[in-house]
Amino acid sequence: MRRRSRDFNIFSLSALDLFASAMGAFVIISVMLFPFYRMNAPNLAQAAQVRKEVEDLKRQTEAMRKQAGIDRAAAAAAGGEAAEADKQRAAVETELQGQQAQIRKGGEALQQCKIALSKLDIHEYDLALVFDTSGSMSAVIKNILLNLRGVVRVMQKMVPNLRIGLVAFHDGRAEAFPLTQMDEAGVRAALQWLQAHGTGSGTNSTDVFKGLSAAAAMTWRRDVPKAIVVIADDPDDDAPSHQAHGVARRFAGRPKAKVAVVTPDHAGQPRFFKDLAKAGGGDFVSDKGDLLTSILLTVIER
Image (cartoon, rainbow, N blue to C red; front, side, top):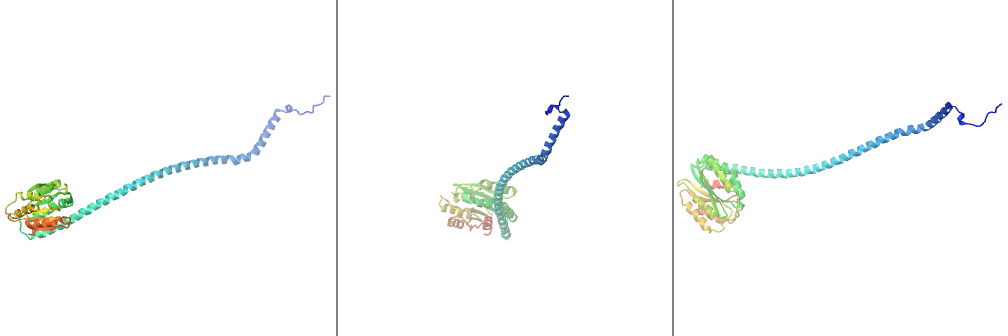
């Protein structure tokens, strides 16, 4: 009888045994590793999600930083514009307050003129305003421009036949707007002429003699009350004072005529102007800010 071999031979196992052995080994390894897998796989996915959220937050933060920078720049620009706007508004308000003050003074002047004119029985009048247009007189000319129309309208109600002429002098020359009936067209023409010639241009060189002579040479009505009002802040630079005084004296020799003088409160050498008014038989007034009232009351009170 043949003896069996006792050596172990793997190749003697059946295919089923081999498969079962491999499967068992796989199951054992899987069971061993399964807890590790369950603990880490979700954590890895969660970590990836957290990283994504962190990146999103970084991007949002950077965008917010950029927007904040833009907003700060815009705020700075807006602040600068607001400051400039406030500055301009303050300048406009100051100018407006000045104009309102001039309007109030003009209203007061009109009221005083109404009172004075109501006491007189004048139906005709010739008036020439002779003013220095050198640079130091710019505020005075502006005052006249603001109030001349209103004053003329008030005088028209009391003096229906009113003529006004204008003379501007500076830099050794004089330019004249002739005595003109103060209807609507005449007022408009006078204001346009004054705006063109009475803007405070020129140097401080003045010539009262030439301005007064130009006014005296206008066409005056013989038997109508008449007046020349000189408005200046400095005497002649070159001409001797007696020349201007002589013109004033000769004009005052005409029927119902006189020469009056109004100076701003900053005027120099008042003796020259006082003597000029005295020679012309009129009043001398040192204006304190209500120029047209000074002019009109000087004309009508005598």
